Each structure stands twice: as C-alpha cells, then as structure tokens.
Length: 114
Image (tube, rainbow, N blue to C red; front, side):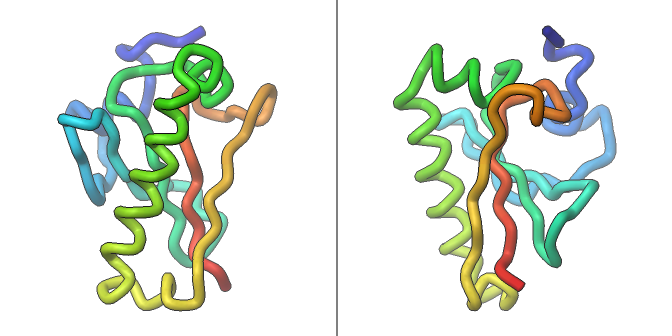
C-alpha cells in the first residue's frame, strides 16, 4: 500500500515530478495525464486527484466514483477530438484489477484506436 507522498501520479499533480496534465477538475477530483509508457499513439490516464491505491480499491470504496471517473474520461476525450485527430477513429478505455496495477494509484487508460 503506497501513500500520496510516494505516488508518482500524485507527484505529477503536485507539480513535483515531470509529467503532462491534459485536464484537471478539482471540483470533481479528477485529472487526465499523459502516460510516460504509452501503449498507443495517444495514451492518457484518467485518475482521481486524491490518492487511492488502485482501481479495485476505488470500486470497493466508491463504485459510483469509479463510474464518475469513467464519465469524466469519456467527456474529456470527446471534447478534444478536434485537437487530437487520432481520436477520430475512436478510443478505448481500459482498467486493471489485481496484480496488473503497476503504479499504486487508481486509473483508467484511454488509448487512441490505431
């Protein structure tokens, strides 16, 4: 179990580590950041701005919050389709549960269709 002080995503959100924040909504408590290990031509991560150890923990603690994060990710990507032409062909949103969590922070992967 990690904490916000050790979490690389939290460090990016605090401006202490390099990273690209694409969008941030502090009222909703969500952000979109660019993945530093992209699996697609465009690979963003939708994350809660408060530290939550994993997507699985987020779902167990606040299932509605996980759905809100999904809605946020979809809305933000759709609002950028004109600026990011790779999204014109569509996009995938995926999440991992269990041992597939490589960074201890809840996240949804948003990948442009290739």
